[in-house]
Image 1: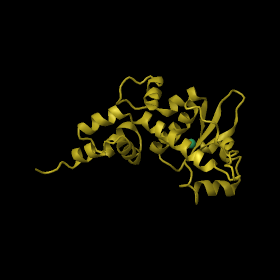
Image 2: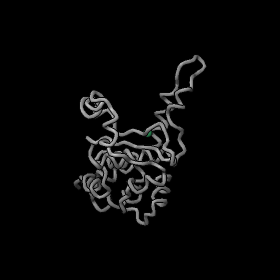
Image 3: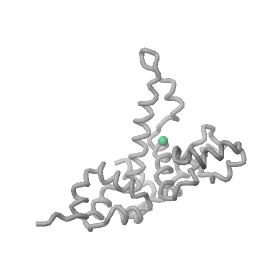
Image 4: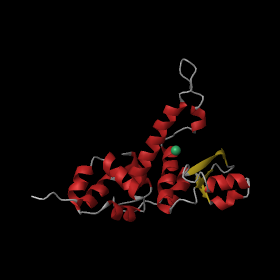
Length: 189
Ligand SMILES: [Zn+2]
């Protein structure tokens, strides 16, 4: 339902309209900066690592320091396609709207044996932000209608400007998989 709230906040009137996180980012006080703009402040080795060997290990990042105007810098992995940027940025926006504290604060949390329990805590927060962002990008009602019209995951992905994997995630989490497989592969009588 929070995904729906974000769509309304973005001024979308139809559940089949495409949400543009790049438009919504400013309301969350996030400033998306091209990777090229920070590249010069990184060592050559770091750049090689980020864009080479580790390019599949990160999707985006937020600067821990807030700018004087209250904005936070967001960098998206430039080796990833636009449809992945949509989900990554939407997750960052969801963190802000859900009031999540930056993860580094959570690291202080320890259990009674003194062990760090931040990992589980962060995983729950990350999942909530990702799920909310995904629901804002691909609302349940729109998904349901398009499935009823026999649309494939690939077609819905192009429609909403997201990856096919995100559409499939939304179909599964919304418990629409039986309806989807029935519409794509109708059972023979
Ligand atoms: Zn996150």
